Amino acid sequence: MKAGMQWLRKSGAVGLASLLLASLLAPPALRAATPEAEGPRFDVIVASNLFGDILSDLGSALGGSLGIAASANIDPERRWPSMFEPVHGSAPDIAGQGIANPIAAIWTAALMLDHLGLAEEASRVMRAIEATTAAGIVTPDLGGGATTREVGEAVAAEL
Image 1: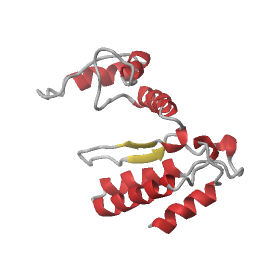
Image 2 (image 1 turned 45 degrees about the vertical axis):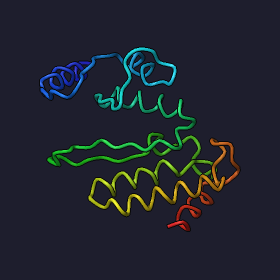
Image 3 (image 1 turned 90 degrees about the horizontal axis):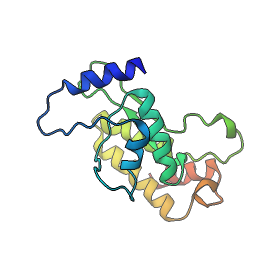
């Protein structure tokens, strides 16, 4: 919590005139991001790692599945490494069962490609994901019957 408070103080000192800064705890911030929300809405939520992790997990669950949520912790000034990972992490609880949704990991790769200046390649990956899911090739978390390997191979074939 101490780190979160320090981050909040520093973020308020940024001084961007076009940026509306709102200080909310995680539960109200998540409520503000839902379609039924009244009051302030957000295009972007910036948070410390702890609260960002909480919000991304809950937000992706609201979207239908942790298996489709890509994540990036980006240093836009490129002084420090940026990190890219699916919101669900490695999903050790379902490892080896063939039911993990690979879409978030693949989407995360697209985020990384874009960050590295490979916008066309990132776009190709996203189109491959869209074509695969539009064809109904999805894992059980999204109501489908495809395995992890089948979804991954279908995306690869679209590339």
